[in-house]
Image (tube, rainbow, N blue to C red):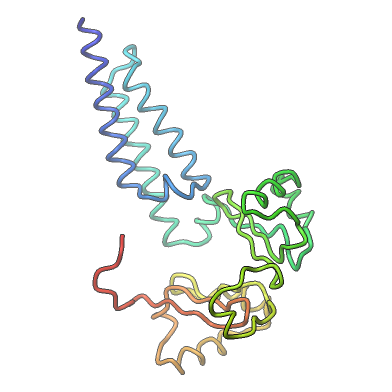
Length: 234
C-alpha cells in the first residue's frame, strides 16, 4: 500500500514540476518546436517519468536533476534571445527549398529533405502542382512556408480594386532585434547608410526598430520597440 501512495505523490510532483517548468520556458516549447525545444521537452519528460515511477532512484536526486536541466534550458533560451549566432546554433536556420519556382536540390540534400516530404508538405497546404510555387522555405521548426506565384494566388478584396503586382523579390530581413543584418543588405545591393537615411525620414533610428523587412513588392515594413499598444493580446 505504501508503494502505491509513494507513486501517487511522485506522479503528482512530476506533473506539477513539468507544468511549472514548461510555463516558465514559454509557449515556444509547445508550438513551433526547434531543435533546442525538442531536446528540452524530451529530456524533461524522461526525467519527470523517472520521478513518477522509478522508485529505485532517490526522488530528491531526480528533482535536483530536473531543476538543473530546466536551468540549463532556460539559460540557453535567454542567451539565444540576445545572441543571434547562438540562436542559429541551438535552433537552426530556415532553408529555402524553392526559389523563383525552381527546386534547390543542393539545399534539400544539405538538410536531408526529400522530394516526397516536399510534395507532402505542399499538399497539406492544398498545393498539388509544384509549378504554382514561387518560393518555399523550410523553417527551423520543420514546417514549410510557401509563397505562391501571383497567377495562382487567391483574389482578395484589395485585388478587386488594385491590380496585383508581380513578385519582385524574396523578403529581405533588414533589422532584427535592433541589429542591422549586414549580410542581408550586402547580398541585395543595399547599404546601412541607405537604411539609416530611410529611418531618419521617419524620425527614427536603428535602436528604435525591433524588426524591419523589405517585402516581396520592395515595400518596407518597420516594427518598433514602442508599439504604443496599451494592452497587447497575449
